[in-house]
Image (cartoon, rainbow, N blue to C red; front, side, top):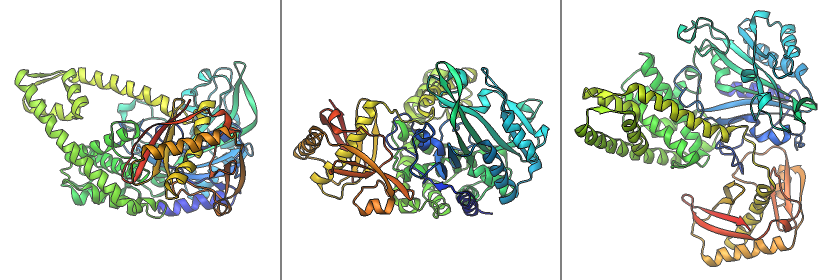
Length: 594
């Protein structure tokens, strides 16, 4: 069964049970300053899990492209990736455990033919006066999962809330126990991970294939209480399910990865499977370039900030691990074309943006190869003054030149210099913890800051979009935005720099609409009908059949999920504070509400 077959099976399974599809959103979520990337299928559904009604109803599913930086250092084993696809289904106050668990079990065993004897499940064992989730355990037992295939873990493993454990949940936060499903790949336990192997062991024998979160609690007056309307949030790794489905031991041997590996073999001087070190380089290169292709296709370009910095890091790591395989220069374009070909059906925008993707990859590769040369020169200067490479020196080269620590170590070894490996290891751990700590704030649940100020700014983007189209013409289309409590950033299609006169006209129009105190309303309607009636829809995204259309008086009408203010009068004075290029044919403005 191919990855295309799996997508069809999953879609048909949930459609047959009355679920509506929620289309995949871009890897950079719109108007969400709290997260760098879309990290799961449920990210766009947080407001609805919190109680807001969804226009498609209470039973939903999707296949969401996702990206997580937390696993970047783990890539290279049999199951970790940066970019991945998450299959998901949700119940918003409709069914609960009694349907979700049998349905998922049916999908795995009946639809996909998984061996139930090799399925293991984890259960929440209880914490903070919250009982163990025996209800879920009993449902699994009724389906035939044996006692020794059920394991209990604490809140650090089998509890979900955006804040962490029940003890960490703030007032008003929702959460609940989850039940993960693992598959025993049958590989031998690696003893370096401890004597006892269990489903959550890191040795690679077990692979997690899905997780059902049961959102049944809320923190009220300091106590964890039961919700009257309970939700289900399920997420499963498409690549990991494919691994089992196709009888492989690694996700990199499935049909969403192995053609990329084979293309690298053609372009490199090594064969996959020769030894574990080269295997790791193959896997990292395949993962990082696949991720880079998807990121660039969704509008991200290499830079020194936020999403662009992560993309730059991926490409530079790809260069380094490509060097380990003696990969020829300028090979990334051929690998990128392979990625676009694999995913042409589910993600046609990859092929559509192939030239842009290749150009970005080639430019960044050239820049980094120049950086490597500069780093080598700097290393040689240091080597003339001292015969020991300290942790500070190694990190100076890393931070200043992007010079890989491993390469510094190799050069030191060649010159028989002393190399403070322990000090560098400690520095790497410190650096990684600091980085993760910063990222945790960005990735904690992926819920946009729905404060009044950010809601004001979001509403203002609608006014800005329409004003731009009035002043500059209807070729203007939104290409992205970012909102914080301090300002809004808005990207749009336009070939030229805005003149001071054009900026003034735009501000006058928007402030006039604010003064008119226009009402802001929405209706749920059919997507095609909404477009027919003149509603703007962003980015060429796929939309569900039923959508929300927000209108600001008769001035603006857009397909949008919200939230918005009720009237424009409370927005304050609108002012554009900066205008710049955001890429070929794309302009960017920053604006504030005073």
